[in-house]
Amino acid sequence: MSDFVLFLVFVSACVFICCLFKSDKRTPEQKRIDDAADAAKNAEINRKLLIDTYGNLNPVMICPHCREKGHTRTKEVKRKKGVSGAKVTGAILTFGVSMLATGLSRKEGLTQAHCDNCGATWDF
Ligand SMILES: [Zn+2]
Image (cartoon, helix red, strand yellow):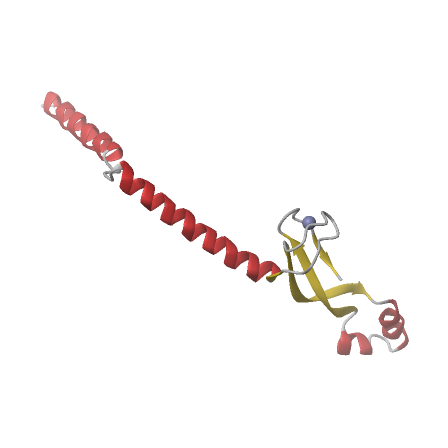
């Protein structure tokens, strides 16, 4: 009886190992085509992500970091500019009433730029 159990274990182990190795049945040519399609898809996703994060390429802008033209993306952004001194004073004078209304940080509309060539990101 125990021999039979051992045999069963052996067979299931074989089936398991076979399943692990047979998974990729594609021909090398098909595999190459699929890989190329995957790479194209990833490149497209990356491109969209770059546009999402850094905006569209600006063909005339020159990167101040690497001096390359046409690699810079620009995008309108809102930045919190830290705690505003005037507002802190206002908050103390009005016992925090103005703070409730406006918050302590200023928000500024800026242009964020990112260079694809050297990877620098800056605001102006
Ligand atoms: Zn650059």
